Length: 323
Picture 1 (spheres, rainbow, N blue to C red):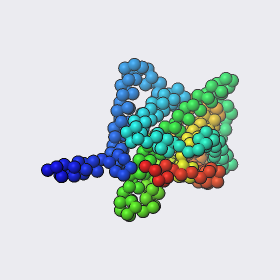
Picture 2 (picture 1 turned 135 degrees about the vertical axis):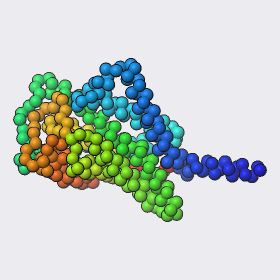
Picture 3 (picture 1 turned 45 degrees about the horizontal axis):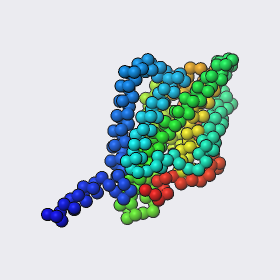
Picture 4 (picture 1 turned 120 degrees about the vertical axis):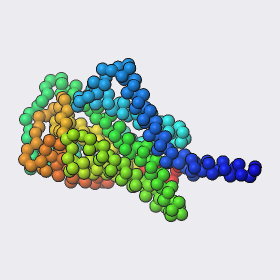
């Protein structure tokens, strides 16, 4: 009887604990449960303490976007922090590390603005966009510019970490463990895990959640998938999400504030320039905006090449051999 108890306990522990700690499947289940609890707590709290804030969160305004993204970031950030304590990993392990993070973020900001500007230039060169002057004047240019920059930095932080942070790292290590088991500790297992997680979260799920945007088109959704691939490639190449944080923020800021074009059919309140699509929707993007234009494809591919040529090589955490 004394011999069977340890064996039973060992099998029970094996179900939950692997060579790298809590098994990835249980980690994902627990993380999603914590995200759900955090979201419920925030909604209940707002309805009880500040019901007016729920109305502020509606519409494409900088204040509403900031509120929405702060809550969204907390809803994934707090569970990730709790999971880091449970798993005994530093929070930066979830694709937040790397050297020169500020420099990588700054290069991402510059790259995002430049690449979106190139896309606008291509639209102008093909007669697919028209310009109608300034929509703002005086101090409103600066105040809206700063407010929208803050809003889109939060958008970048939330969307990148939600799809390419904790979830990506955890699924990647889980798939890598399965690949090792099937291939008897194949050295390719971490890379297999990385790219399976990339396809699931950055290509498929990232595009799927954007189908809820009323102004999206099939071409626009395809290009969301392509953008997700660009972002996850930057993680693969640099070893962290900091370039993607900056690029995502600046691309959205240039699109929604600076050039004032539609984003998934929505035009932001307080944009700088007055623009309108012209010609065939395949070229202009129509009411979807530039992200619905076929011209967006080469710009996104060029963005990936930009990462490859200008950013130093790093190692994603799931590939560095540490648990």
